[in-house]
Image (tube, rainbow, N blue to C red; front, side, top):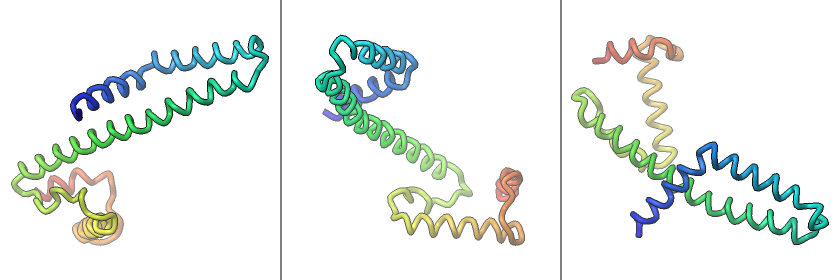
Length: 137
């Protein structure tokens, strides 16, 4: 079931991100708006587009969330592998995405403080980030 859902979700998300999907949606909205005079701008005419857009939006939320969850998990796995493969890397960072927001914020704060200490105080200059990384190895 997971593989089928993932396959369908990936296909729909892939299509929804294409220009053709936008053009299709735009054409449908233009067609709906042009049909207004034919249906005398009735409540049913309005209900059709409201219902359709609500259903599509509701379903797309789940598909987009699934795609983002999958992408984030894959990215974390790749980063964990890089951390594991680099001899000087601190392996305690593997899996920190499972910690609470407060714990992650503490880790970020500690890293920024460590960076400040390495630079002799003050906010680290982003332009020299690569130089700091090279010096660290």
